[in-house]
Length: 176
View 1: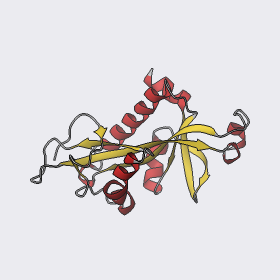
View 2 (view 1 turned 135 degrees about the vertical axis):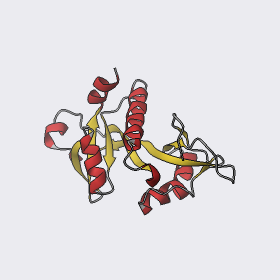
View 3 (view 1 turned 180 degrees about the horizontal axis):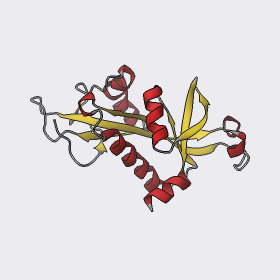
View 4 (view 1 turned 90 degrees about the vertical axis):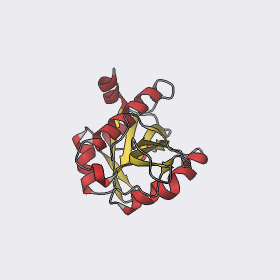
């Protein structure tokens, strides 16, 4: 299976969600059962990297995906060094809610491609809708290592997991 060059919005009439398998049940369940519903509700947007060829059923397999949403952080949830520089009302951030690569493509750099595409998307949005940072709640230690390798830092604990972030100022330097 080979993939196309461009991420596109998830379309359940075109993209075969059932054949996606990244090896993580939580992420497989998300793309199969929740992503379209959340998009329809206006809660998040899921972008997919389709395969270059369709399946016998006419649908196109998904090689990688990411899901994004706007979010807010309470000042009191932030480390003191960051919080003291920010206003007392909730701080707008972008949430990288999900990111996964089909297990057939593990280890070939597609995770990095998906992450860069998502960060560039956030950077472009920030010209019209500013946010302080991009945050991510990672699923496991492998995911934590992945995000740390690309400049994310620990921000706080959230829902019994560590939340990582990368400031929008840092993205501005990357995508100028």
